[in-house]
Image 1 (cartoon, rainbow, N blue to C red):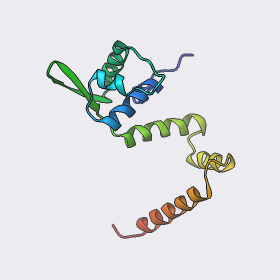
Image 2 (cartoon, rainbow, N blue to C red):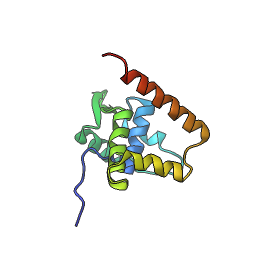
Image 3 (cartoon, rainbow, N blue to C red):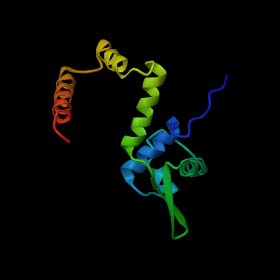
Image 4 (cartoon, rainbow, N blue to C red):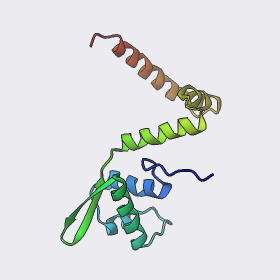
Length: 133
């Protein structure tokens, strides 16, 4: 059965353009084309269509200036990452964030330094949750 498209989900190509917008700020189609990574050749019209799609999805906003649209992110990188992470946890780890972390530990994706940082973040979060509101 075909999967239903999720309007919150960014395709890999859309994500590539969003990263350019997050890093560059408001940009014309040509500015985005010029910022594509080396070896990533997309036609101007393809980028234009993808930016329009992002606009219609509510992921990018646009403003007309001097006969050219300037596109800017309508969602933050953190919000988009949160949606992607939620999808990944649901699809790959049966909705269990613990399984994600365990998999990262088992496959040695975390360095000892990463583990130390995580431990400090956990301790900080625990101490803040114990404070009166």
